Length: 356
Image 1 (tube, one colour):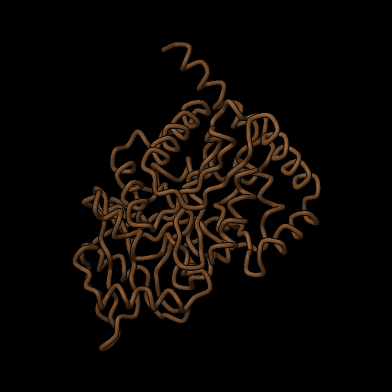
Image 2 (image 1 turned 135 degrees about the vertical axis):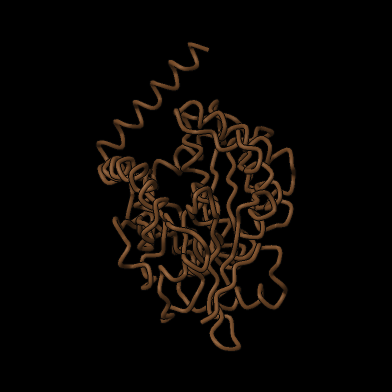
């Protein structure tokens, strides 16, 4: 096999079409984070994005999008933003992972949301988890019936608060796809406030992420949905769509309406909007929210780990990241620890705001 490393914008129409065709060879490769549009978008705003093009004879057999950092450290494209990662290739591809890294001129490739089904990376898994998926192939009514059965209390609460929001504030209106830049800016402002309120890193404080989200919105690969109560925007969600698959990405809401649980209402209305617009599943992202259990219809096995060659950079990377990854993993796998960590972060955020 021949492996060539190129910048995303160096891919021609033939290669992009082949990429899209390869996405049809695996059950979860259609996820938007694995689509060429996402890699091309990130490549517009980051100079470290590359794509390994794997050729087998006259045909392209695979694409591996990655970011190449200092000292030969590699990550999936959009690392820290993505909920699914991997090589875009048929399931039976026989390729040596370390040889692929050598061709990419990286000593280590670190992943945290890798498709666990990809055989070539299986020996390098350190932790396996699952990502919940809403299934909408049978329509919204079937999905809601599933939710009502799987989580009756959650469903009843959402519907009650939805009616109360309409009575107290104004008639509800859900816009599945808003093209308004003002709506997008509002969502990013809400999300930044949430990050700061909960002690998380504000992703929208990074200019390249803001530019990326604007670009994906402008091109239509990103779908911005907005819930209104009368004239008041209540909540919004920005997700990525690749044909019938939606990847949930940035949900946010106006905290003035927090008592109505606008995030949960928004998830249910997003499911209805997607089902009515040809989307058959929504990948919800890994863990963190117990209500996702009732929404999910299936799960995607994902893995954390690293592929490494024997280089000084790989050893340094392990020493720097392994303890932190183990601690984070322990928190994510234990709901009680997760709740405690969440409270600690929120307390820290409050103290930080007071100090400033």
